[in-house]
Amino acid sequence: MTGKSLPWKSLEIDAAEELRGTLLLAVLGYFQSILEETTRKANQANLAKGQFLAKMSHELRTPLNAILGFAQIIDRDNSLSSEQQKYVGIINRSGEHLLSLINDVLEMSRIEAGQLILHQNYFDLYKLIQSVQELLSFKESSQEISLDFHIDSDIPQYLEGDESKLRQIIVNLVGNAIKFTQVGQIDVHLCLLSYDNNSRDIELQLQVKDTGVGIKKENLETIFEPFKQTEKGGENHEGTGLGLSISRQFARLMEGDITVESELGKGSIFTCTLKMMVQTKIEDFVKQPSKQIIGLQPSQTDYRILVVEDVKDNQLLMMKILSSVGFEVRSANNGQEALEMWQKWHPQLIWMDMRMPVMDGYEASRRIRQLEAENPNRQTPVIIIALTATAFDEERKAILEIGCNDFVPKPFKEAVIFEKMKQYLGLEYVYQESTINLSSHGTVNEVDNFEQLNAEMEKMPKAWVEELRKTALSAREKNLIHLIQEIPEQYFFLADSLNQMLEELAFEKIVNLTEGFNHE
Image 1 (cartoon, rainbow, N blue to C red):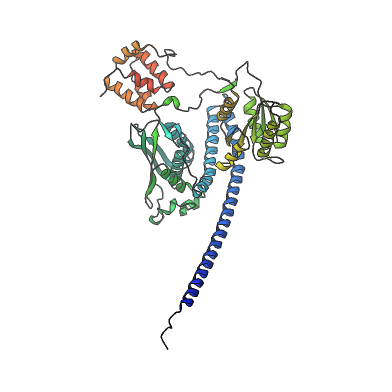
Image 2 (cartoon, helix red, strand yellow):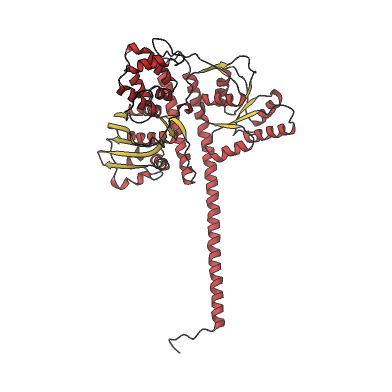
């Protein structure tokens, strides 16, 4: 009958259902195979990308290590003129900026892989801002622009957070403003949005305002995309096109964000918010040693240190740093030479580069640990500290797994090298005598005359004492200096005592000193 379908028999329905199931399985299997092949290719691509980035990290960081390292050595020379010191400072700051550009690419790869984390530490916010200002003022001086930094006085000086990421945000935002402002003004303003005394949580706002070329309305969001630059940015050939994207990711990781307002031809305002914590336990504050190491304390073991490095410039740098304070130092050009020298010379510590010809640092370290295990009574296991130009956590994990005690990334700070050796060898250093005088009345070695302190404190206005207490509670060093300068000359014991406490960052002592007075 035309136009009508015949009724399906049960066998036909079963056959159709079976065919449907078979086809469905075939389709699913087909898509599964495509997915697996795509995943395999993606994994291969990610592996190749990771290997490429690791190699580039090593190739770029290795010469930069020599540049920054020798700049640190030159900076120790007291015979340098002020102009020469300025030039060395420029080399240091420019090298650090180059390092940050290298890190841009590496950070973006971490972001794409979902591996971005915060590295918390204690730091001096004022010092950080000053270093950024010094770095960027060199770029600003080559253009007809004025660059002004302002930090509100109620912002605590010492914070706990990711100093490196905060620094990178500031450098990226201000550097971006300089790039797009040939003539005019750039204002950088850091202000306090909120501060919880109980939790020590603090919310900051960084605002960078420029009178540059401005940004088209349609580009206000695309500028935060990786590798995207405005037409003006592309013409300048500066940067990687990653700075703003990375900065926004960093800010969001710190529970904040970056927004932009702009008017074409008039300028832009970038506003960054982020959260950190106030550091009040100043005794836990990790402060860079102000005294220079000039030697080893006498009556210690003669320490034999082996430097394994195939790049001659970096080898010379390490030899210079270590021999200058009295270590007995020898060098090896590759892992094979290191293995032979370890067997003959028996160094107590080996600084081991990881990427070398003939035999790399991984194989050399592995063989040393294997030979030590086979002869446990032969000698005390040598300390092996890896010198690595890689920035990837996976490779650093592998370094520890093969038997290295620790690692130091390149480029390294001289102070880090000495601190690691002190940690593992238990040695003691001789430091250069400090030439700083706390006052014209002499140094207060111990602040223990509380009667005299209280007597002089009672003479000070109550408003001043209360301000001293509040300022010490928030660890604002610069504000404390101004308050101490307000003390009349006849109360020099109080001034000297507070100066001594401030020199030691003993803010808690200052707070305790004010406890006997009524607070508002």
